[in-house]
Image (tube, rainbow, N blue to C red; front, top):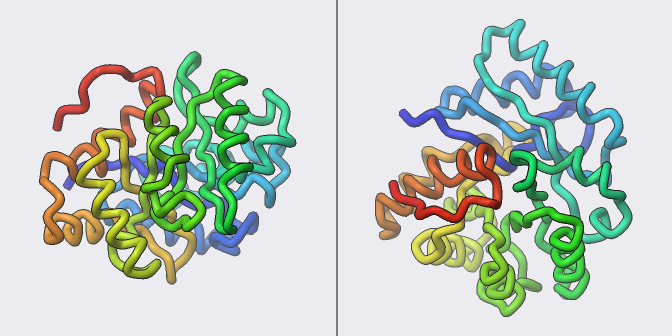
Length: 247
C-alpha cells in the first residue's frame, strides 16, 4: 500500500464542521493511516478559525497523535473561500498556504452558489500576491461548470491544479459530480485526489475511490499520479514543478 498524502482533510478538532473532539480527530487519523496515508494537510475552513491559533492547534493534535503511536505527519494549512482571500493579508495567507518557499499555494474552495466571478477574482489575487492555486473540488461546483467551465479552463492554462474529492468518485455528491470527477481524473495531469474527510460519516476514502475510478476506466498511471505522486509533488515541490508527472 502506498504511503499517500492528503492535501484536503478537516482534522483539527472543534474548529469547523470536521471532528468535534480530540478523540474524533485521532480516530479519523487512525482511519487515514489504515488507508495508507502518512501525511495529512489539516485544512479547516479559514472563516471558522483564528488563523493565529492554527499552529498551536496543529501542534496539540500532533502531540495527541504521537501519544497514540500514529506515525502521521500533520501539516497546518487551511481551505480558503474567495471572500477569505480578499480579506486576508499576505502574512495570514502564508499561514494557510502549503509548499516550499517560492512555490507556495493556497487551497481555494470552489463556490457553492451560482457565481464564479468572486472565485476568479480571488484566484487572480492569490497569483498577484505570489501564491499558486489548487482548486478544491471543482467537480461539485455548478458555478465552475463541474470542472468544465471557462473559469477552470483558464485556471488550468495559468498553472493551477485541481483537487478532486474521493467521495465524488464514489457518487456521494451525486451523479454529475461523479462523472465530472472521473473525466477530470482521466484527462487532466494536474488533478489530484483527496478525501476531504470530515468525520465518521465522511471518512478517508482514497483507496476505495481509486478502486472505483479504475473500474470506471481511469488508466492506472493516471490514478497513481492523482493518488500518490501529485499530492507529494504539491507538498514538496509546490506549484513551481514544471517537470513531467510520470507514474
